[in-house]
Amino acid sequence: MNNHRVLKQYIRQTRNALPSRKLKRQIMPQIYASVCHYMEQNPEADLKTLQEHFGTPYEIAGSYLQELDQVVLLRKLRNNKRILATISTVMALLLLFWLGYTTSEFVSSYRTSHGYNVIITKKEAS
Image 1 (cartoon, rainbow, N blue to C red):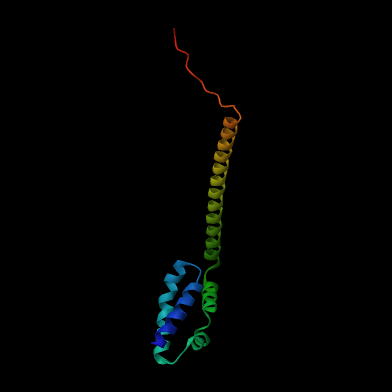
Image 2: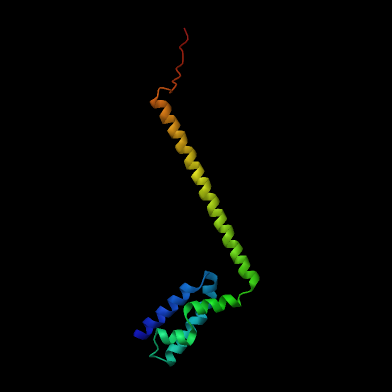
């Protein structure tokens, strides 16, 4: 049972070290199979032994990122910048809308409290 816990811990750490879901879907089955095979051959292996044999989770993630094509990696970084810019723009627009609404309510409240509220009544025809 301890063997299973060590396996789950190492796999979870490795999955968390990988940066993208697509990369995780592509790589994790291979890593899982390799680690399971090693654990069958070495049932007394602990987390330190796995890290010595396969590398730390961050070393694994780094080695796969080095294998990625530079064009693909730059495209992913550019997409992240676009997403960040879109989110920032939406947040700025929401802030401006809130600021405008709050200012309008403040001015209306100020005018009402200082007697500037104009009430228009319709004059009845005789």
